[in-house]
Length: 178
Image (cartoon, rainbow, N blue to C red):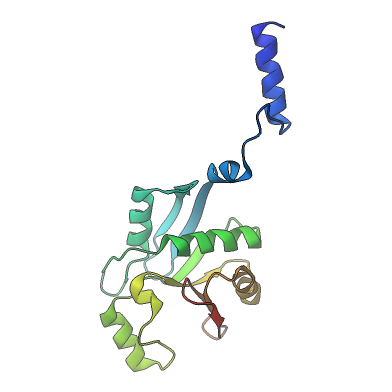
C-alpha cells in the first residue's frame, strides 16, 4: 500500500467514525467547543462566543461574557459563574436551538438589587444575580413553558417561572423551583 493509499484509508476510517486506537469517551468529550449566543435586551448588545474548549474556559471569552452580562443600570462588571454558562449551553442543546438567549438580567450589583427589592417583593435579599450565578432569559421562538421544562429537567440549580414578565430565571444555586 502506498503512502497516499494509506492516508486515504485512514481518512476514510476517521470519517466513518472508526479509529485505530480508541480514545476514552471522556477524552472525546473534552475536545468539544462550547458556544453561546446572548442578546441583552436592555443594551441591545449581542455576543456569539466560544467560551470553552473541552475542560478549558477561554479567559477573553469569559471577559466578553462578563461585560455583556454586567449590571446595565450601574455599569458594574462582575465575573459570571462558568457553570451558569455551561447550564445555558446544555439548555440550548436540550431545546435543539441555535437562537441566542435574550437576556433580561445577568449580574446585579448590591445597589441595584436593593433598589429592585424596594420596588418588588419578588427580589431576593441575597440574590444569586449579585454573585454572577443567576440569569433571567427567554429564547425567541421557544415557548416559555418549554424553556422552563428544559431547565428543570437538567437539574442545574434554581428555576423561576415568570410568565407575566415573559422570562425564566436560572441559577447555579441549590436545586429548587418556583
